[in-house]
Image 1 (spheres, rainbow, N blue to C red):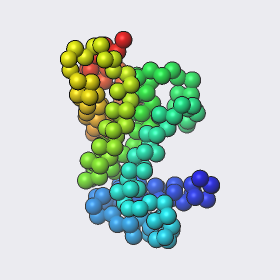
Image 2: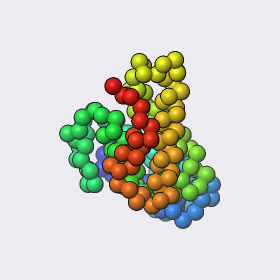
Image 3: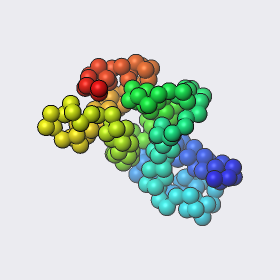
Image 4: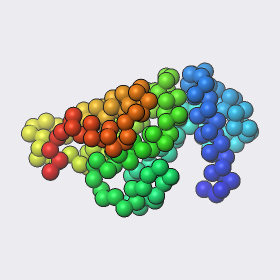
Length: 185
């Protein structure tokens, strides 16, 4: 994506985030986003098919980076030399959520919440399924365990957001792993 397209996309994201902070998701129209971003209708639709698509892409932009093979240092954190450890991945996700706190709080305050949480849970399931060993499940379907742990982490994040992210990502990761304490070896 060239710089001009990226700048337009960022403008759309910023406009959408600003609107989410001001009003409910259902009350936001594509026209509101276009007006706030100061772009044309065709420009919006060249980037996104619908408002729901914009929300899904916003979620993807928040989390896709965590799953890349080669990570680069970022402003608030640097996981570029980190190993492929589950606790590291979870901490990295929490940093992204904290960095996008205003966006996430806006999303979680309205009916966009369920759509966001479903996308978020899908990403978490991708992470957890790689790290949960088959041998420790003892006749419990791995998919059940993954669903349970991902759901638990979603609830952890909701709690963290409701408490104004008072804990550091490292501290919240420790809480989470202490509570779920499954054998990952």
